[in-house]
Length: 376
Image 1 (cartoon, one colour):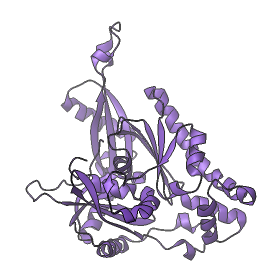
Image 2: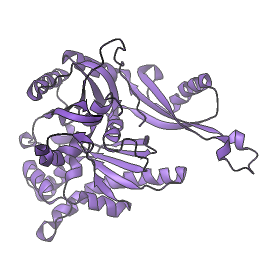
Image 3: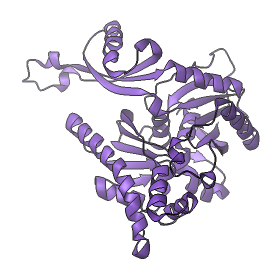
Image 4: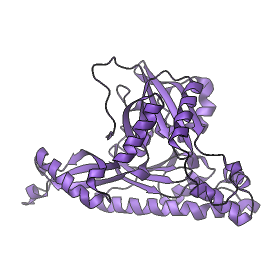
């Protein structure tokens, strides 16, 4: 799994850590997962979450769920401190998530050239993809693949001219990086790395699996759609549509409070029949917007790479809604499963019911914790 980091790697002269912590600062909750290693496997030490804005039952304005301001960084720091104390973490350092909505990423192709030439070409070409001045972003890139001459048809005399290098470029505004560094420092945490959410989720639920996969993360306020091929994230897109929009549509259409709309959403999902069918129809009007974007991305990928999507993995809070997996499978024509970031992690058997319920929401935090754990 290729990853791109935006933090400072741990000092090589320090004692190697035995515990590994991930901190996911989401729009609706902060989640922490701490792991250790036992017999060549990751073992869960502790986990927990804390809400980052006031609960749905306190919302009075129908549109406020989408339009409200996030809480201050000072409040986030206090929430992290309280959460660490509550779940009794042991790590002094952590990997933090970076929101996909705050980044720019793309896969670029270059003719085969020397490394120093690639570096110059990337900085020049990046200006075409990044909508803000290059001086204001941190650029990171990785070579994903090379098209070798011997892979070209023997009859093609221009094969050498067609050798290509595929490069993944990610740009994150420096102000975003500085903000997260400041939050970590104020919370008393040494920041090891920062990583885009989609890369962390992919590590947690896909790892080194080579299957061509669409990873769909449905959060409270937005959704991330990624295409992973050969265990590498090739395409990323953030969509400003999430679970809050589904709740809002139900609330407005049925003229009921948001809290009741949220309850109906979780109870019936997209599999309701009979008198509750209207609820599913209202939900599908929003979910279809996510599906349309996922279909657009898969069509582009299929045309460009001449590969078919083999499966869809859904993560995030919205992935657990009743019937949503079957709905996506029918519309996108590929098998759908819920992401389980704890599938290869050791944890007490008595936690099984809880792990099954919360798993899709903990993919980012778990992937972050796995980032620096040996052999992952």
